Length: 401
Ligand SMILES: Cc1cc2nc3c(=O)[nH]c(=O)nc-3n(C[C@H](O)[C@H](O)[C@H](O)COP(=O)(O)OP(=O)(O)OC[C@H]3O[C@@H](n4cnc5c(N)ncnc54)[C@H](O)[C@@H]3O)c2cc1C
Image 1 (tube, rainbow, N blue to C red):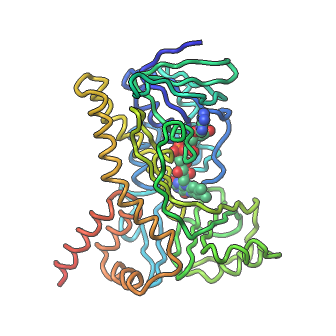
Image 2 (cartoon, rainbow, N blue to C red):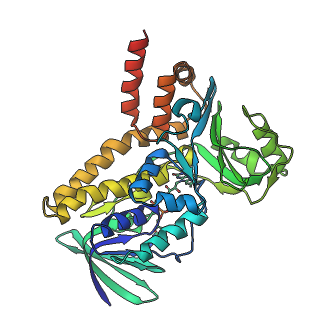
Image 3 (cartoon, helix red, strand yellow):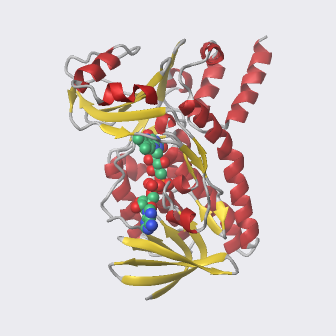
């Protein structure tokens, strides 16, 4: 079988779905393929959508529906060694700046349902990418195989949204820059712990994330140095050890009624990787272009960010205002300019063994001034880049000196 389309996207995760919706709503024909079944969802995720991602869900008009299926507004309270930064105290309750907790079990099938309702989208589930076709080294389509047999899909734009282990990256030899991480993580779900908003604890040589997921369910994700892995993995009574560790965290409510309701999910070797956002005329978005250690909980937001940037730049190609090469080169620049500083910052955080004296001084400084605390949360929420944060920090320090 043969198909002809404007955009073909490999991968119907958050990045691929968002890109498909942006294009389809501008009347472009989109074919999106995924090897998974449409009701499968991502298990390895802690379900926090950073505020920058929430703004994009709003622009896609998905936000109200996601709220209805169980998404809940959440700021992040940051418990730093020097004290706590409380989201609500800094931004109030009416601000547009907040994150969102939505379980992937609910979010992923919802996104596929929205795709299937779009008349301009053809979604092919359980179809695997086999190869890429080219004209003069620029991709002009893909070949997939699945329940409908072998399909050759020709497209004006080929998008790789096929995740961190991208087959398109392998086929195009789009090699990743790899920044190793020194962290492993495990997470699980509890009932009976009265946490109402999401929180992150930065400890000397570890960190902990708690996400309130609704219906009294709280996810706890713990991040430790690789050197501690055997201690945790070989522990015979994980429940006691984990709860004893959590009990020592600042402002933690009573754990007397804590009941674990799921398995521990372990993740090792979660290195940070960055690939060229464009190769052979193919645009890479989401984890296919950049994967960061989950200690930062930012991958969904970056998936949404990159889908939107790609759409904005390449619409100029589809509207005949730019060549494809020009449009993709601008996408690549936006990706590099905005995301590589986050990539390097998160890589450093995930590689460290313990807080250095200067990091402790930094946290002391952040906590002393509300405006600096606010800007720091905006950085953590990925609304501003590390460079923008540094500028804000400097001007605040100059003003207050
Ligand atoms: C432990 C952990 C916790 C995390 N917590 C958070 C968090 O709280 N907040 C956050 O923002 N991020 C978090 N992340 C990161 C986040 O889950 C990812 O960054 C995000 O889901 C990436 O989306 P994506 O669409 O780019 O890729 P993916 O979700 O990986 O989607 C890729 C899609 O491509 C398909 N595919 C792959 N190869 C092929 C092929 N050959 N043919 C056809 N289809 C193919 C796959 O089936 C898949 O559906 C976490 C990650 C981990 C590991």
